[in-house]
Image (tube, rainbow, N blue to C red; front, side, top):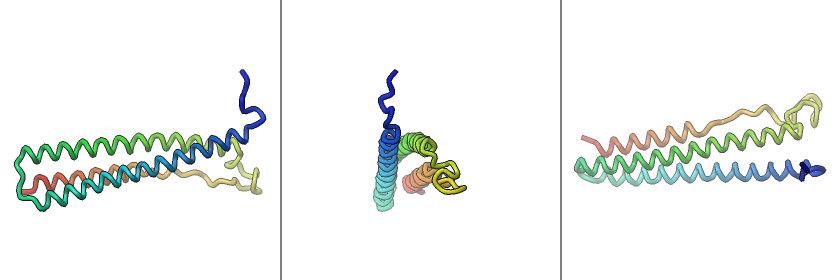
Length: 144
């Protein structure tokens, strides 16, 4: 089988790296927008409910169900992006390894070009925000 990139390995790695970095930036932006939109809806709903007199139970449960569905969808979208972001980080790590960025002495005497990679997971903080805001809505909905 012919290797289409033969003789152009660096260009292939560069193309893949640029593609993956752009995708990582896009997913991070999408996560921020999902969380911001969800949290804005929570604030609007909570502010509206706080000004209303006691609601009938059917309306309370209906609003609670809608809020729960919005929370579940937000968490699912954020989790899917989290998993995809981990795949992208692994791809970028493979590209860095192929270029020798993690090996000491290749570019800098006795040091690797890149420091050791540490993953920083944001999903747990997004999840925490979704859960706390949903609990806040439930407290406002079912206040005594």
